[in-house]
Image 1: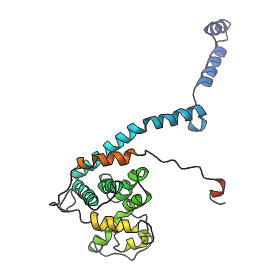
Image 2 (image 1 turned 180 degrees about the vertical axis):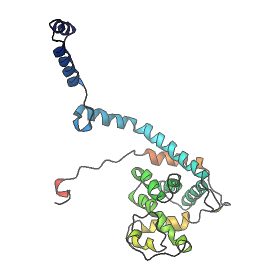
Image 3 (image 1 turned 135 degrees about the vertical axis):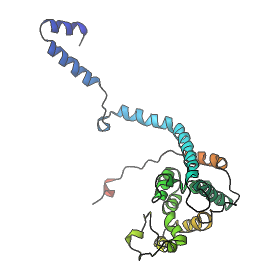
Length: 242
């Protein structure tokens, strides 16, 4: 509605009608703000923006990951090394044992979730890694505490008989035999190697541990190769109950 027409309606005492018309026009031209009401053009603009920003997002993520490991230097747990030193030493051992790059980065990050919560720190690290690593690496990090319990579980007091609480996912199980529940998993041998050869050995203050800067290029490559994965919509025949 033109400004002249609005003034003319107001002169005739129809100001309310003019205001209503203006409001209706504004509402009609306003973009939908609920995703359920978005237009195809809005979805296209949104997806293109995410793709365009993917590189910057990967760079920011890498910086945050390195900062997270650095923060672990504040965690002292009586093991003889800081949590940062433990993460670096685990990654160094994995590197020197011939592990691939994503597993080395996973080793670097495996205990960094303790910055947020010690009980489920493995799950926290695993979810950070998830979009960037294989299913096997993800599962090893997610369940490493259960495998690690075979070394310390028996020393933390009486252990109840294994029950459903010790079937993965489990984040605080100290049963030293619970890891056997996962013997049929394809990633079981890798989890045994990760915890047996690298993780549980990495509390040596005299070990020639590589500095965090050494792993920075690896972190950037692993977290930069993809920012997220999209799953295809499920077919009707795959929906629950069919």
